[in-house]
Image 1 (cartoon, one colour):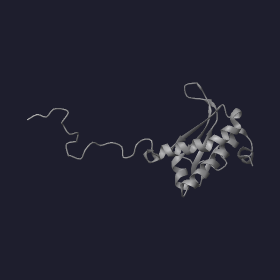
Image 2 (cartoon, rainbow, N blue to C red):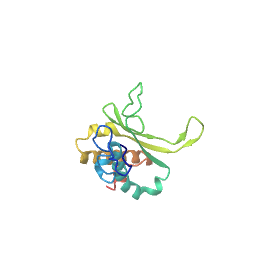
Image 3 (tube, rainbow, N blue to C red):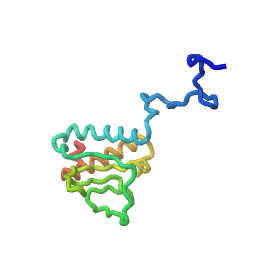
Image 4 (cartoon, rainbow, N blue to C red):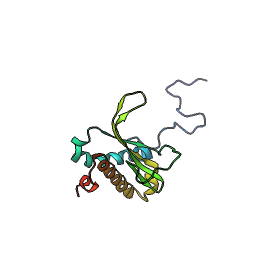
Length: 151
């Protein structure tokens, strides 16, 4: 006996019903950790960019999960690298030319996993991301971090 398509129950073959997202995409709980971190970086960058907009037109900000594996550990004096022990928290990559000969813009790269590992809670992570961005923007502009932060 065949059922019409209107009467057919929409279930998977194990009878548990349709599968879908646990939370609607409009709720914060539906965001991944990486998406939440990206939003945190944008929130931390907003006041800096509002104040220094004209000086930061040639600067990009990017997020990577972890730093690339390097055979040597960068020294604390290495230009543009903020370290937590031996693990970089961020890096300032100066403008230059890529492998294909095309010009590249300067960029600040924040490393999500080392920053998350260092913070104990979301508030501390937010403060840490802000501090790292202030340090790197100051390094990029060649000024003291207090000037960037407005202090």
